[in-house]
Image (cartoon, rainbow, N blue to C red; front, side, top):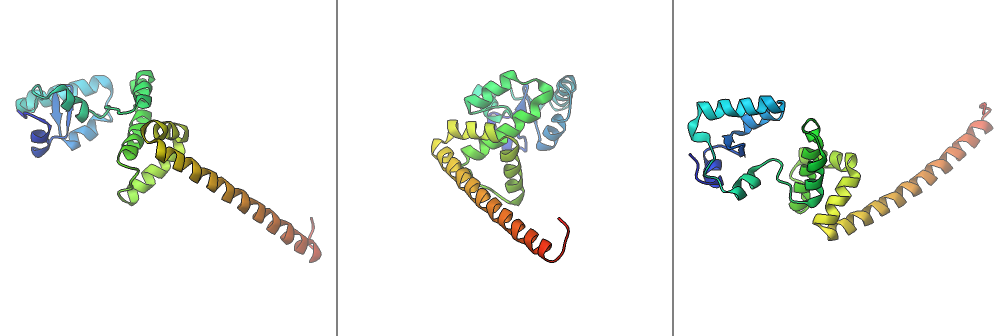
Length: 177
C-alpha cells in the first residue's frame, strides 16, 4: 500500500480515484466509461490488487491527484453545474487552467495545437480563467487581441482595395461585370 502521493508515483500509479490507485493506462480507459461502469472497473482493480487501495492518502493528496481538482472558482462553479456526460467541457477547461497556472508556457507542438484550439473554442471561458488566475496575463492577452483585430481590419481594407483594382482591370480588358 502506498503511503503518500510520491510513493504512488514511484510505483507507477498516477491517480487516486474513489480510493483506488490506477495507472495512466487504466485511467485512459476510465475516461471512456459510463459512471456505473467506472465504479465496477475500479472495484475490479481494487479486488485484484489489494495493495492499490489509497486509504492512507491525505485528503490533500486525493484532491491534488484528482482529475477534477480545479484551482479556480470559475471551473469549480462550472463543475457544480455540469452533468457527468458533459464532463469533456470541464476537462478542456482544466487543461486551459493548468496552462495558465504553468505560466502560459507551451511544451511542444502538440501542446501548442491543443492550447490554440481550446483558446479558440472556449474563448470566453479562457478570458474568465485568465482574469481570475493571472490578471497581468489577462491584460496582455486583451492587448494582443486588440492589435490582431487592428491588423485584420487593415488587411481587410487592403484586400477590398485590391479587389476593386482587379475588377477595374477585368472590366477594362473586356470582361463582363
